[in-house]
Image (tube, rainbow, N blue to C red; front, side, top):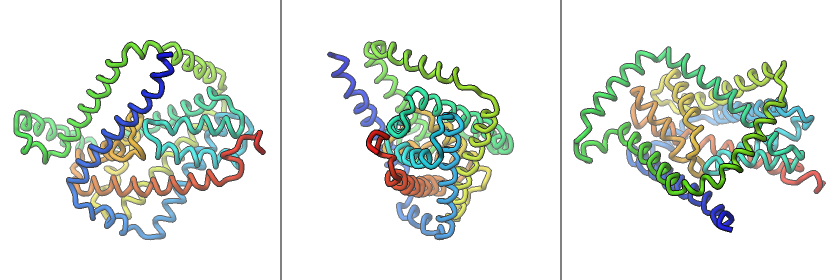
Length: 339
């Protein structure tokens, strides 16, 4: 009985927490620049650049559908799977606390009757492939930027030491330090929330373990023959098309950000996105790592913040367009029994 009463509170608490954290980050970042800089940056992007970048974005989603088809091997077909992945992409970008991941499981089960554990296993396999590629990318690009990273790390540590003990007035202009403080507060809030619910956590441990075992069995049953090569190729192309979309947009804004710093920021932000804290539409929680790493690489705070919010707004618009396409596609929001 108590468990039933507790369940509704947990997602509500997580959503409220994500809204507070995201809102605080958005407020802090936007007060550091002139608001007009964001629409000005977006207005510099030509219509042809917007069309090309959208096609690249749609190609990345199509390749993600191809990868799911390779992993699932259920004979669904891209004609039915692509709209599902398009709608799933919309939910992932809009819903807080990674709740969008569940939409893929729900839509696939409703549309094709695919078991939830099999859908979760496909998400895990795709995420692992993306993570491996991102880690390799960080090592490669990080090696290219090693001098800039070393110099920035040395400067940051010395600046951090100087700032310790100074007044709030003196520290508020240090963008990187404030972001670190926000991250530390976020971690503290999450830790306190977990401690407060430590007794409830044990109550759900057996349920979580059973689901993990089910997904593990599904992964173990997945044969990796020539499909492994197909999954890796699809994952590589997904990353390439997604990064090409974002790099093309930011470069079209005319901001002073080199391509290598831009790619490193994209890789770092992708890695940071694995954390469970994700505000509504990702505002604040998406920009924080982007701004932090660009500022760390000596990009001006104006360009870092402007590029982060401008890029995020455009990607949200693209996700909405793909979501509308997915929702309007025949049969996506109806189960097979309804047809």
